[in-house]
Length: 213
Image: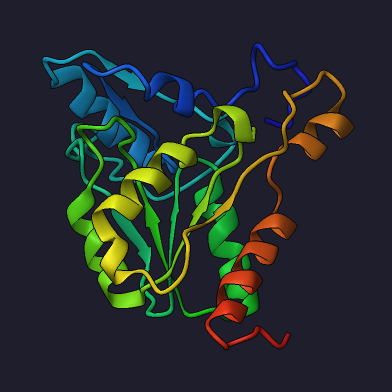
Protein backbone atom coordinates (compact mmCIF):
# COMPACT_ATOMS: atom_id res chain seq x y z
CA UNK A 1 0.00 0.00 0.00
CA UNK A 2 1.03 3.61 -0.36
CA UNK A 3 1.38 3.55 -4.14
CA UNK A 4 -1.93 5.11 -5.16
CA UNK A 5 -2.56 2.26 -7.61
CA UNK A 6 -6.06 1.55 -6.33
CA UNK A 7 -7.61 -1.44 -4.60
CA UNK A 8 -6.96 -3.89 -7.43
CA UNK A 9 -3.21 -3.49 -6.94
CA UNK A 10 -2.92 -2.45 -3.29
CA UNK A 11 -4.99 -4.79 -1.17
CA UNK A 12 -3.91 -7.18 1.57
CA UNK A 13 -5.31 -10.46 0.20
CA UNK A 14 -4.16 -12.75 3.02
CA UNK A 15 -7.57 -13.00 4.67
CA UNK A 16 -9.28 -13.89 1.40
CA UNK A 17 -6.76 -16.45 0.21
CA UNK A 18 -6.51 -18.12 3.62
CA UNK A 19 -10.17 -19.18 3.41
CA UNK A 20 -9.26 -21.79 0.78
CA UNK A 21 -7.52 -24.95 2.05
CA UNK A 22 -5.06 -26.98 0.03
CA UNK A 23 -2.29 -24.51 -0.64
CA UNK A 24 0.49 -22.81 1.27
CA UNK A 25 0.66 -19.05 1.84
CA UNK A 26 3.90 -17.32 2.81
CA UNK A 27 4.35 -13.66 3.69
CA UNK A 28 8.02 -12.58 3.85
CA UNK A 29 8.82 -9.36 5.71
CA UNK A 30 12.49 -8.97 4.77
CA UNK A 31 14.65 -9.59 1.68
CA UNK A 32 16.39 -12.44 3.54
CA UNK A 33 13.10 -14.14 4.33
CA UNK A 34 11.85 -13.61 0.80
CA UNK A 35 14.72 -15.57 -0.73
CA UNK A 36 14.60 -18.35 1.85
CA UNK A 37 10.84 -18.77 1.65
CA UNK A 38 10.80 -18.57 -2.14
CA UNK A 39 13.42 -21.31 -2.35
CA UNK A 40 11.32 -23.49 -0.06
CA UNK A 41 8.21 -22.70 -2.08
CA UNK A 42 9.89 -23.81 -5.29
CA UNK A 43 10.70 -27.20 -3.76
CA UNK A 44 7.32 -27.66 -2.09
CA UNK A 45 5.01 -30.16 -3.80
CA UNK A 46 1.95 -28.17 -2.73
CA UNK A 47 0.87 -25.03 -4.58
CA UNK A 48 2.39 -22.03 -2.80
CA UNK A 49 1.24 -18.41 -2.84
CA UNK A 50 4.02 -15.91 -2.05
CA UNK A 51 2.64 -12.55 -0.94
CA UNK A 52 4.80 -9.58 -1.91
CA UNK A 53 4.32 -6.25 -0.16
CA UNK A 54 5.27 -3.16 -2.14
CA UNK A 55 7.34 -1.87 0.79
CA UNK A 56 9.63 -4.88 0.40
CA UNK A 57 10.80 -3.78 -3.03
CA UNK A 58 12.72 -0.79 -1.64
CA UNK A 59 13.88 -2.48 1.56
CA UNK A 60 17.41 -3.60 2.33
CA UNK A 61 18.77 -6.25 4.63
CA UNK A 62 21.58 -8.66 5.29
CA UNK A 63 21.92 -11.73 3.10
CA UNK A 64 24.64 -14.32 2.42
CA UNK A 65 25.90 -12.85 -0.85
CA UNK A 66 27.96 -15.94 -1.60
CA UNK A 67 24.97 -18.29 -1.38
CA UNK A 68 21.35 -17.55 -2.21
CA UNK A 69 20.35 -21.21 -2.12
CA UNK A 70 19.38 -21.18 1.56
CA UNK A 71 15.97 -22.28 2.77
CA UNK A 72 13.55 -21.09 5.44
CA UNK A 73 11.11 -23.91 6.30
CA UNK A 74 7.47 -23.31 5.50
CA UNK A 75 5.34 -23.23 8.63
CA UNK A 76 8.00 -21.73 10.89
CA UNK A 77 7.34 -18.34 12.50
CA UNK A 78 10.12 -16.03 13.71
CA UNK A 79 10.39 -14.32 17.10
CA UNK A 80 11.58 -10.90 15.99
CA UNK A 81 11.78 -9.47 19.49
CA UNK A 82 11.45 -11.30 22.83
CA UNK A 83 9.14 -9.96 25.51
CA UNK A 84 7.02 -11.02 28.47
CA UNK A 85 3.96 -8.74 28.70
CA UNK A 86 2.17 -9.04 25.36
CA UNK A 87 2.48 -11.22 22.26
CA UNK A 88 2.20 -9.25 19.01
CA UNK A 89 1.38 -11.34 15.94
CA UNK A 90 1.99 -9.69 12.59
CA UNK A 91 3.28 -10.23 9.06
CA UNK A 92 4.57 -8.53 5.89
CA UNK A 93 5.28 -4.79 6.15
CA UNK A 94 3.69 -4.46 9.57
CA UNK A 95 6.53 -6.38 11.20
CA UNK A 96 9.01 -3.51 10.84
CA UNK A 97 6.36 -0.90 11.66
CA UNK A 98 5.34 -2.78 14.79
CA UNK A 99 8.92 -3.19 15.93
CA UNK A 100 9.57 0.53 15.50
CA UNK A 101 6.52 1.45 17.61
CA UNK A 102 7.35 -1.09 20.32
CA UNK A 103 10.92 0.18 20.58
CA UNK A 104 9.78 3.81 20.69
CA UNK A 105 7.31 3.11 23.50
CA UNK A 106 9.61 0.78 25.40
CA UNK A 107 6.94 -1.91 25.69
CA UNK A 108 7.94 -5.37 26.92
CA UNK A 109 6.35 -7.01 23.88
CA UNK A 110 7.23 -10.23 22.10
CA UNK A 111 6.86 -9.72 18.34
CA UNK A 112 6.24 -12.78 16.18
CA UNK A 113 6.50 -12.64 12.40
CA UNK A 114 4.02 -15.30 11.29
CA UNK A 115 5.70 -15.92 7.90
CA UNK A 116 3.25 -18.73 6.98
CA UNK A 117 -0.45 -17.81 6.87
CA UNK A 118 -2.22 -20.89 5.51
CA UNK A 119 -4.24 -22.78 8.10
CA UNK A 120 -2.05 -25.86 7.92
CA UNK A 121 1.15 -23.82 8.11
CA UNK A 122 0.54 -21.54 11.10
CA UNK A 123 3.28 -22.15 13.67
CA UNK A 124 1.09 -22.79 16.68
CA UNK A 125 3.98 -24.18 18.70
CA UNK A 126 5.79 -20.83 18.65
CA UNK A 127 2.60 -18.81 19.14
CA UNK A 128 1.28 -20.89 22.02
CA UNK A 129 4.63 -20.82 23.83
CA UNK A 130 4.56 -17.03 23.67
CA UNK A 131 0.93 -16.75 24.80
CA UNK A 132 1.61 -19.02 27.77
CA UNK A 133 4.35 -16.58 28.78
CA UNK A 134 2.59 -13.25 28.19
CA UNK A 135 -1.13 -13.99 28.62
CA UNK A 136 -1.98 -11.15 26.24
CA UNK A 137 -2.23 -10.97 22.44
CA UNK A 138 -2.36 -8.14 19.91
CA UNK A 139 -2.78 -8.99 16.21
CA UNK A 140 -1.47 -6.30 13.84
CA UNK A 141 -2.24 -6.19 10.13
CA UNK A 142 -2.53 -3.47 7.53
CA UNK A 143 -5.57 -4.44 5.49
CA UNK A 144 -9.26 -3.65 5.75
CA UNK A 145 -11.25 -5.12 8.63
CA UNK A 146 -13.83 -6.83 6.43
CA UNK A 147 -11.35 -9.07 4.62
CA UNK A 148 -8.69 -9.25 7.32
CA UNK A 149 -6.67 -12.32 8.17
CA UNK A 150 -6.70 -11.46 11.86
CA UNK A 151 -10.39 -12.25 12.31
CA UNK A 152 -9.85 -15.94 11.64
CA UNK A 153 -6.56 -15.96 13.53
CA UNK A 154 -8.13 -14.43 16.64
CA UNK A 155 -10.99 -16.93 16.56
CA UNK A 156 -8.68 -19.93 16.25
CA UNK A 157 -6.27 -18.54 18.84
CA UNK A 158 -8.90 -18.07 21.52
CA UNK A 159 -10.10 -21.63 20.95
CA UNK A 160 -6.59 -22.99 21.42
CA UNK A 161 -5.31 -20.64 24.13
CA UNK A 162 -8.40 -19.51 26.04
CA UNK A 163 -7.14 -20.71 29.43
CA UNK A 164 -3.90 -18.76 29.06
CA UNK A 165 -5.43 -15.42 28.04
CA UNK A 166 -5.76 -12.68 30.66
CA UNK A 167 -7.93 -10.47 28.42
CA UNK A 168 -9.70 -10.66 25.05
CA UNK A 169 -7.45 -10.79 21.99
CA UNK A 170 -6.89 -7.26 20.69
CA UNK A 171 -6.56 -6.35 17.03
CA UNK A 172 -5.17 -3.54 14.89
CA UNK A 173 -6.32 -3.44 11.28
CA UNK A 174 -7.32 -1.07 8.52
CA UNK A 175 -10.64 0.70 8.18
CA UNK A 176 -13.77 -0.60 6.43
CA UNK A 177 -12.53 0.80 3.14
CA UNK A 178 -10.57 -0.32 0.11
CA UNK A 179 -7.32 1.37 -0.92
CA UNK A 180 -7.96 4.30 -3.21
CA UNK A 181 -6.03 5.89 -6.07
CA UNK A 182 -5.86 8.91 -3.77
CA UNK A 183 -2.77 8.45 -1.62
CA UNK A 184 -4.40 10.47 1.15
CA UNK A 185 -7.46 8.23 1.24
CA UNK A 186 -5.31 5.14 0.86
CA UNK A 187 -3.26 6.12 3.91
CA UNK A 188 -6.46 6.67 5.87
CA UNK A 189 -7.76 3.21 4.94
CA UNK A 190 -4.65 1.31 6.08
CA UNK A 191 -3.50 0.65 9.63
CA UNK A 192 -0.82 3.15 10.61
CA UNK A 193 1.85 3.38 13.32
CA UNK A 194 -0.46 5.48 15.49
CA UNK A 195 -3.01 2.66 15.35
CA UNK A 196 -0.38 0.19 16.54
CA UNK A 197 0.52 2.56 19.37
CA UNK A 198 -3.13 2.88 20.39
CA UNK A 199 -3.51 -0.90 20.38
CA UNK A 200 -0.44 -1.41 22.54
CA UNK A 201 -1.52 1.28 24.98
CA UNK A 202 -4.94 -0.33 25.36
CA UNK A 203 -3.52 -3.82 25.96
CA UNK A 204 -1.02 -2.58 28.53
CA UNK A 205 -3.59 -0.41 30.29
CA UNK A 206 -5.89 -3.41 30.63
CA UNK A 207 -3.09 -5.13 32.56
CA UNK A 208 -2.82 -2.18 34.94
CA UNK A 209 0.46 -1.16 33.29
CA UNK A 210 -0.34 2.01 31.35
CA UNK A 211 2.38 3.34 29.06
CA UNK A 212 3.44 6.66 30.53
CA UNK A 213 5.41 8.20 27.65
